[in-house]
Length: 413
Image (cartoon, rainbow, N blue to C red; front, top):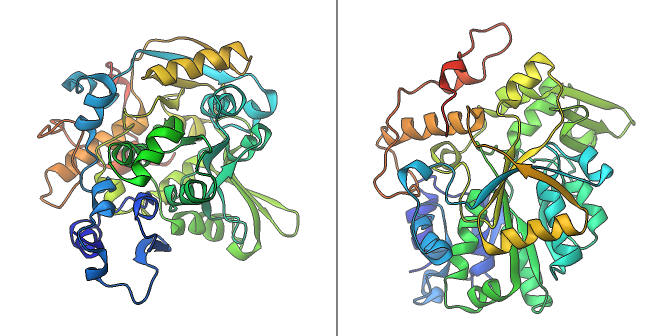
């Protein structure tokens, strides 16, 4: 197998998740990214130079996230059909950060960021991988390595934008091989890391021995950078070149897109409006994705409000919090340590009722399962979503459009 095989099996089918795992796993380090596209960085490199190495394809979650294999390793079993979208977990909690600064900076209470703080403070992590911004283009997403717990306030909010991510860990693996790492990532990032940890390679052994905690936010789908650019230029009416800071959910819950420009002005766009704009800037892989959460993280977090789109449309304010899914022993220890160090407040909560992000994901997945197009494998082999498909635009109707009545769909998920 070679990089050419990765191109044929994944890239040409539109199944690349832009996770960056191929960049991290490639033994000679010849894979990089041109924007959102994996490429060979050595002009003279040919398929024959790869020899029999297939690490880039093996680690890739694009076509096969390999969820059942990871679940067997983590939990000793695979999920049931009732666990299709939530995965296996030991408990679910309502949580929020106790740091006033982190809580204020967060989109939905800062539970995940508080656990990343805990990793640095109490779990021997030396560095955290989180999503930040490109220093040269502050409106673009870019991975960031954080060592100071106080700096996590800058990466506390959700980032609705694709960017190569896991490849940045290569700098740690090569220059600080003994460093311990905690990370947050969406489903495809976590799946890739679990695949890497199962590999008998130098990178796989490093990932097994040095990644101490993995956490994920629930993901309805991610967005190309062009989606953010269109919100900045068409909604806020400012050029992207003038942007010096971007936040996706700033201010009172559920927050608004906040764009600071080089003239000192801050321009705001309603969150619901941006969500609609983002909808036309998705990749095939994100739209066809079969995961709301990977179910393979140590801890997963969803917004405590099941319908932040409606909250944005209606101007509803409420105490922000997250639903914290505790899955592994490492996740349970992280929550306990966060409690002990006064970083996280939590209480048990029942998991029931509609969640808009999950419903959108389920409906899109069902549509792609019936399309005949290449799609990624789901967490349960051969499982298909049997439901009446509701077009995505009905779930995110503008205030002056007919909206989907979701009241009758409040059954447990």
